[in-house]
Amino acid sequence: GACRSESLRAILVPSLDMARQLGIKTVAEGVETDDDFRVASELGCDVAQGYLFAKAMPAAEVQPWMLQHMRNPLPMHVR
Image (tube, rainbow, N blue to C red; front, side):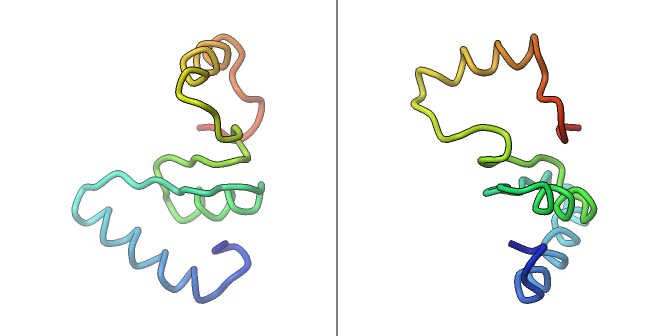
């Protein structure tokens, strides 16, 4: 969203500013596109999650997925 919606960006920017002032880490949820990730990163989100990185999965699949990606990190945007 916020990359396509000025209204969402108007909510996101001050929310991130407030989190920084309070020392709270931020998570961009629902990151589905490179543009979503770019905007979240540029605005200072600490962590991003969403379909861009992995599809929703049953809890039993999380640990194997994490182990696989620790050996072979995602080749894109994760910082």
